[in-house]
Image (cartoon, rainbow, N blue to C red):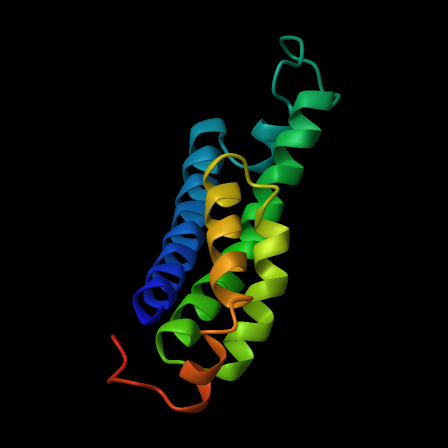
Length: 130
C-alpha cells in the first residue's frame, strides 16, 4: 500500500500542475480574462456569453485547486497526517474535473480511506521521495 500512497501523491501533484498549465494556456490563448468572458460574443460586442462565464468559472476552479493539490501530494509523499485528511476532502472536489480529476479522485479516495494506510502515517516505512 506504500506504493499506492506514493502514486496518489504524485497524481495529485500532476493534477495540480496540469490545472495550472491549462489555466495559463487558456488565458494566453484568449488574451486574458476579458477574452475568455467574450467567447462567442458578436464581433465588437461587449456582453459576456454563457459559454465564456462557465469557462471562466472552470479556469478559476482549476487555479484555486492547483495549489492545495500540489501541497497535498507533497504531504502524502512525506507521510504527513494532515495531508491524508485534506487529501480526502480534495479528492471529493477533484471528482468534478472530468476525466483526469475523476480518475485521480477515485484512486486517492480508495488509497486514503484504506485501513492499511493509517499505520504508514504513524510509522513511516522508508525515506520519503522528496
